[in-house]
Each structure stands twice: as C-alpha cells, then as structure tokens.
Image (tube, rainbow, N blue to C red; front, side, top):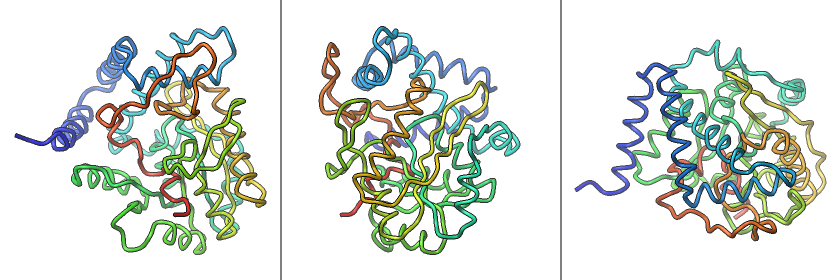
Length: 316
C-alpha cells in the first residue's frame, strides 16, 4: 500500500496534470468551491487564519466574510501554481502592476547584490516568474519535502520559471554560505520573511503585539553589504499587484527586521484577504479570539516551507 507521502506526491501530480488541461473558468470555479468548503469546515488552518486576520483589521470587521475571501485568495494562488507553466509570459508579465519599480531596477543595476523580502501575500510564484522574465534571475531556498519525489517536482517547477533553488539540507554547502556567495557576485535573493520557523527569530512589534520574524534577510544584508528591500504582493482583478519599498538602512539586525515588519504590516493592512497566513505568528490570540493550535503536519500545505522561507537562511 502506498505511503502517505506517496499519496501526497500522487495528489500533486494529478493536480498539475488535471488542472492544467481543464478550461480555466471551470478550474477556477472548482477551486473557489473547495475554498468555500474548507472555510465552512473550519479546520485548524482556517481557524488560525481567522485569528491572524483579527489582528490586522479594525474592530467590527466581518471576520467571516474576510476569512472566506482570504481562503478564496489562497485557492487562487494554488490554481495559478498548477497552471503557471502553461501561462503565456505576456500574461504573467503584462498583467503585473508594480508600484515603485525603480527601487528594484536601480538597486539591481548597482551590482552589489539584492535581497527581496516578502510576506506570504498574493502569488509569490507568479512574482518570481515575472522577476526572472524581466531580466532579474534570482536564487531562493527550499526545504526538503517528503517524499523526495515531491521535493524534486517543486524544484523542477520553479527552475522552469527561471529560479535557482538551493536545498535547505543535503546541498553542496550550507545555504547561508551559498546565498552570501550569490549576493557577493551581484545576484538577487527572494525570501519569504513574515514567519520564523527556527525559534531563533528576531522579536518585532507587528500589529501592536510581539511576534518573531526570521533573522535571515537582515543577517545576509549585514554580512554581505547587499541592499534589503521589502516587497509586498496582492491580486488585482485578473492580474497581480506588487509594491517595492526602498532599501532598508543597514543598522543592526533588530532594527532592520523591525523595518521589514513595518512594511509588511502596511501592505497587509491594505490587502488583508491576500495574506495567506494559516500558521501561528503571535504567541497569544487577540482579546476575544479563541486560541488555535497550529495545524498538524497532515493539514499543512505540503509546500508551505517553499522556495523562499527566510528562516531557512538564518544564522545557524
């Protein structure tokens, strides 16, 4: 009998094959329906998402409606992941609206390397395809998934879009060394940076409460001198939106990580439904919200610690 890991790999393989051949409107309706079902079911991940959203929106916001919208946004992310390899570059590049793109282009042209740090917003896979497709190849880190065939599948997917993927473990050298090497050569890194997986994160104030965020982006910037730019993504109608923030001043790890948190908070507050955070960020729930344990491994998305999880690049 196939192992649970093998079932997971088969499910993703089936998803990639079936979703890519379905007419897009049919697939979109199916994913939206699945998101609505998951919202009604109210599993641990959905409860955690609702509790997280309660932190970032004003009192009196309809959390049920917002959670439903956020789950639909997350479902759209997965739909696009499955279909992105077949999407015309004219679409994922042409339908991307970028605010303050000059910060990105000017920083990259300076040749000192560049770190782009993002929250789990919008579609970071599409943004990666856009970035590589517009002349900025980049490197990212991937945690080894189980089974190995699933990890290989996602690495091949990302490499097909123009990304260089460094494994968190089992690579030729420790990820931190390789990432620093890429920066010193003038390369670009993309790191998801709004959640700490290492328990060694940097304390920050995030929506008025203490949270911990990954040390990796700031540590790499200080170690190599590379500029660190916050980036935020969202969905804009049938397309995508992106905001590039100016480079953060090199000071110290705590101050720089707080600056990242502040930029993320600003964009999350503007587009809360596009923040796909189904895991714990704060140690305690907001007043009036029930505590929700993090989802067990079986309920977490198999690719959650994906291409750009920053804690995978923190100092070890």
